Length: 256
Image 1: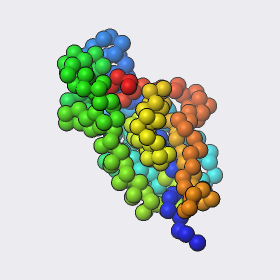
Image 2 (image 1 turned 180 degrees about the vertical axis):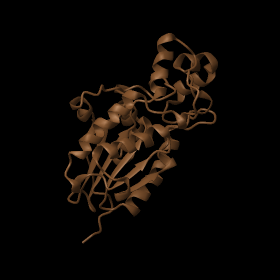
Image 3 (image 1 turned 90 degrees about the horizontal axis):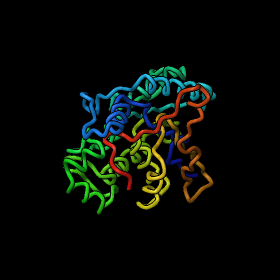
């Protein structure tokens, strides 16, 4: 009998609405070139609504039978993601000392380099040549100076998947990260190509505190595989009366 390679369940969650999401919306609405937020991106906190969303999601996890709740939590090192994970566990009634909880910098937000904190208008105004290059190359491969492309993010997530398959076989793993992290995990786990994942990204942003999940199915493939169960699932928020938000992360690069 072959040993199971994957966790039994993987949930991938985007953090709750952040103060950066709110500031970005205000800057875009006012036609400003720069998003007015003083903190480093890593230190940007949740908004009050983001905390409410995380609490609603936590109650949903808490309603699961004990044997189906997360046994491992992996969080981005960014404040808004880690705080989301902590609120989810607290609201679910899961003691952080009873599970494995690790902060992993490989789950961090995509780095925007010199485009950090710029709105769409600001990018076009300040760096027209980069805007033109990005339009030509496409967001999947475009790397702003000092920043990352989607391919760069995917490379570090391949390493995360190696860690998960090595250390957390048979476990129930909750990953809390960012919009691009959710989509790039989907690209890897569902074996998509550039066209498929960018079409998904083009159609809609990943809602804050939404759940995308996979279950291990031993009957699938040669050695079993992870099968999609939920995609951008927001029912827990709606049931708790928490508004659903789906703002792009900062900065808001134009859709391809």
